[in-house]
Structures are given as C-alpha cells and as structure tokens.
Length: 159
Picture 1 (cartoon, helix red, strand yellow):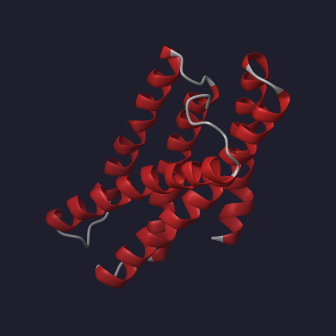
Picture 2: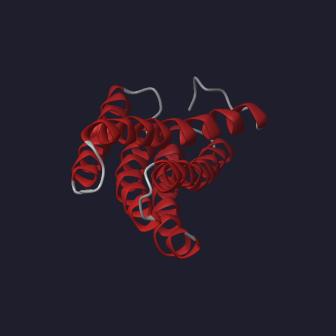
C-alpha cells in the first residue's frame, strides 16, 4: 500500500488539490483556497487509505481473497471518485459542482466491473463487497473533509 500511496494516490491527490486551489483562487481568498486544497489533499489520501484497509479486511478475512485484489478495486475506483469529487469541491456551490459530484459516482461502474472479475466469490458476496466498497470509498473522504472543515473552521457553505 505504501508504494501505491506514493506512486499513485499522492500524485493524483496533489493534482486534484492543485485544481481545487486554482479554481478557488478565482472565487475566494488565498487563505480559503489554500485551506480547501489542503483539506482536499488530506481527505483524499486518508479517506482512500481507510477505504483500502476496510476493503482489504473484508476481502481477505471474510472472503479469503487476495490483498492485491482489494488494492486494485480500491485504487482504480477511488481514483475516479477523487478526481470528480475534487472538481465538485473546487466549484463550490455552483450547478456544475453538483454535476461533478454526481459524476463522481461513475466509479461504481468501475468497481462493479472489477468485482465481477473475481471468480472465487459468490454473487451474494459480490453484492456485499460492492456495497461495502462503494460506501467506504464515498464516505471516508467526505467524513475526513467534514472533520477537517470543522477543525479549521471553514464554512461548509463556502466550500
């Protein structure tokens, strides 16, 4: 996971956070744009890492799967979610922001395709894995974002 974090999630999260910074510089102050970008970076990295840990725990302990499968499922799906969700965060409360946030759920299709490639899991377990993975990829970055917004007193209305 450490190799994936440094080689894949870190550059992707930095790129998305730079996009958030640049777009927020047009609409707000430098300090708020920087705060939003740093929060986006932290929530992307920490949220993806926690989602990977949960998916790996479920896949390896419950279903006797391979941890590499959990890594692949998390990496590609979370990358799509992070990209579109970061664009949604960058545009604030505009209509296009809501469209990007809705588009971030395209990752479920990638996750569904990846889960269907797993042969040693029954269809019921695939459904459970899809639900657990989807919720963890969505919820953990958003929870981290909201906690950091509260901690740094950044208004959720302006973000």
